[in-house]
Length: 436
Image 1 (tube, helix red, strand yellow):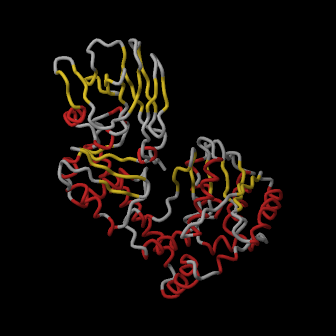
Image 2 (tube, rainbow, N blue to C red; image 1 turned 90 degrees about the vertical axis):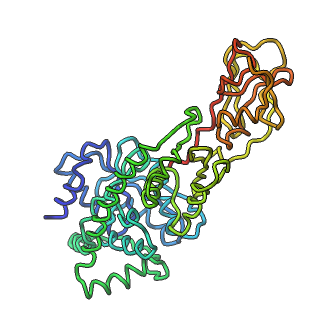
Image 3 (cartoon, rainbow, N blue to C red; image 1 turned 45 degrees about the vertical axis):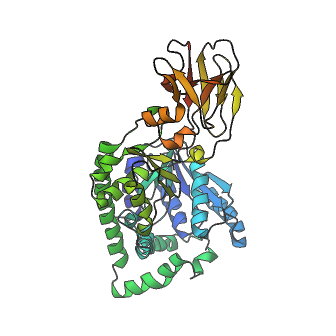
């Protein structure tokens, strides 16, 4: 089967997309991909085709690449957009550049649009080797998926079943010129070392090494899918939101304890995947400490994107503003008024307040309130009785009149009057839950 036919077959699920964009570096692989697509567009009904080039500004040689890409796209009749990005300083410059590239492209993708990248079978084999040497588990050894969500659209890799040698032969046959990234020749980069020295040596002994490694990645992808299906069933059985208005993802501790240690880790990886990167095997001690802590403890497991906290019978995922300390506030409020709280969402007085000096504050310690039929009660004991998570209590808005506690946000049972014509409603921080 020709490259054109295999490419068209790989892209069949996305023929109805509103647009296709090619990530064009100007190198061999993306040049071949763009040329193949431009030729297919002349005889097939394809979505509108364009290209995007990301300039990282990391090396002087790259300054000439946007003009090279413009000339190529002009020749092929394909619109081109050039984006300039700043790469954050990081331990892995390769990873930082990759992150900056995908962030810039994701911001440009409209709903349903597809970004096409030119990774091939040799890249897949290299990725599998790289992750294997880092001790990755099944999910990591899936290597590169053929498609995944990106922003509002999809990232698709239609050349994963094609060898680099095939792309090189195609480029030479058509007399292409392409740019060469000088950093690709530097063996101190791990991927370059694998590409230039390890994989060629393996292929001398096993000519089909790249094919076999790519096949192993497919097997791992299937195993990973099965693990995800098991995790989805486990999570569905233990997902819990005892306080729905908090809008915090939560799991029941009792349900987690019924799972084997391996299924616990599998379920947690699946549940936390949208929120954070997970640690390696050696750093799971924090999870075991959290799960096995005493019932009256408030353990925390800190992860890259946030924190997992346990309170009473549940664990909760916290990120964004939930991790910011709240500053003391004393905000004067009126009837039917909404007030923003720094790093703590917003609070609304619903209904008419009687005459008096009304304020919203947080706990300071020692608060009491008089409840209908119960007399004066200590606020700390009341919050213990209802088992509100400990991490919520210091940021829970209180409503006071002339210095006397009259009500607690979202807790109707903690209101000084049973027939009050008002309510205090709090919308906790929810603008950033760490979704990736």
